[in-house]
Image 1: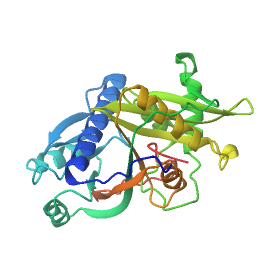
Image 2 (image 1 turned 120 degrees about the vertical axis):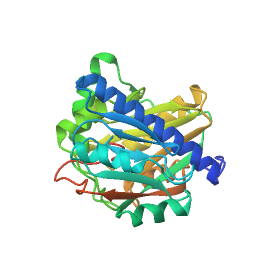
Image 3 (image 1 turned 90 degrees about the vertical axis):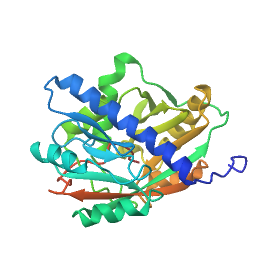
Image 4 (image 1 turned 180 degrees about the vertical axis):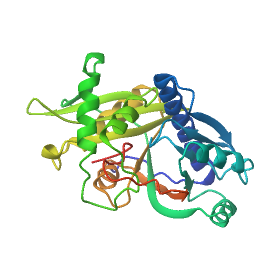
Length: 286
């Protein structure tokens, strides 16, 4: 990957990425509310970011994109909205956000639960691997089911996620990922893994990646990364980003494909722990 331009992340780039992440989370939450039709969820702007509640236990219940527009005025009302629904408040705070925001949150009783890494690289022309193809509409249910099964078996490399979800919630989250392009990889004619990405403001946001346990350590995620990079170039993106657990196989695979570590996000939680007993992070699994 010697021809890939190394990427330096300043606060302006971090803000751009976090704004895109907030838009993605908001879109997913809106999709969940549309599916349920119960009117219980919410999407609220907050200090340049967004606070969202999709459904009980959803990975889209969070505050994203804070730290680049001052302290979050109106946080009292947001915390009350989460409390009324019996949910903890989880904030994903960029390492490059203003330091005053972290101090503000910890003073309000937020505790640090974990970290996640945001990696990125410039997008250039590339070849689409033969063993990866777009998921057809008539394959969606098969893709969703296989991805949920794969995500339910966490990889043993790196730090575990603080978020764990039952299979049904994983299916819902994967289904409600708004505006994504889904791909599947095969080995010996079998479904081996899948992934997706979404285009937001010129950024290709990679996510929803998982490999079935029987096919791990066989280059499946590398092929899916290469496929999405080629597709992102065709879509006119100039930047690709992916979120991984620190020290994970996903992190290692991304670095091998030219992704640089841009920054970490601290996961801060107030209220009942966001951790449950089964499942895996729906955003990125190896």
